Length: 374
Image (cartoon, rainbow, N blue to C red; front, side, top):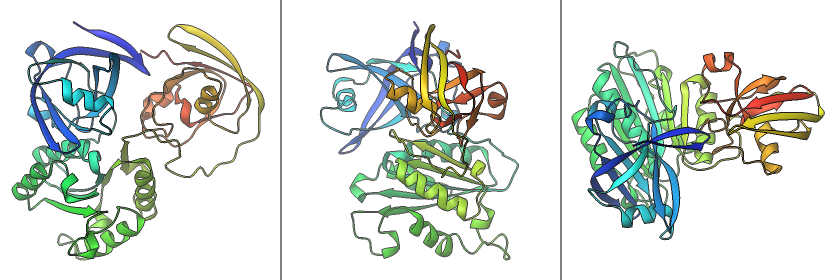
């Protein structure tokens, strides 16, 4: 049985049984799903990806995306889920679905991924806050399993130790792989013995981390650990991502090596826009979505395409508005646009004319778009 719905792109859903359910903290829980043999190929995934879960909440159908904490080699789908409110959909998911029940699970998606390099010596640093640890946990388990020469550093922020999710798993990884993995916990609302670990993960904290933790490199006396960082992974709320991504960039990490995943809608740019564009007014727009053709006119090109279409109440798919999630991906069939920063499209997709509506500025009097890519 498969079901398809449109949520930016078509999603293939399959019924999977809940194999394990565990309450982790007062507002988080985990779900583990059995993958039957006939669906093994459908649920192959990369570390850092997510699945969509379709379920009933207060009599309505809900679709939420949840990152996997499992690593590909484990052969299972495990999710970490936060309950934001007692009346919310995730609370209904926790209360009404149990071991043995079936849920419709979308095939793995998402591009919060990095290329595996088992033969290289690498240094990877990750910053996570709260439930943002979920895809980082998948990444770290996978890297430790597949890359014997890679060393890892995790800086994990929470309000308090009571809200620290997956601590048992993280501490087990640190004990098992102590020569290659170091984990540091930070608390924003709980006093710590060492003042260094009190407060949010932000630009000031990153400066301290670089100078006091990632400084002396035993493998190269002439450089620091920070100098050797190959990839940075960041997962949490938008403001944290923006602050840390820019701080990492200003401390010498190329943007292409800074990867991030949002856990909420975020309407701001991660990196500041440094370009200025000639003003164009009265722009004609044609676009196709779900097989239906639309026409409209944008007053000018002072704002991005997605934002202007949303103002006009068109039901264009989106999630982050920051070039990260890819929900608003479409093809540019006519006209010219400037694609600003994006964390989603590959070079091949850009060459094929794909753009992200949320990060595109119009540079011609007319454009034609197609959101029906699959």
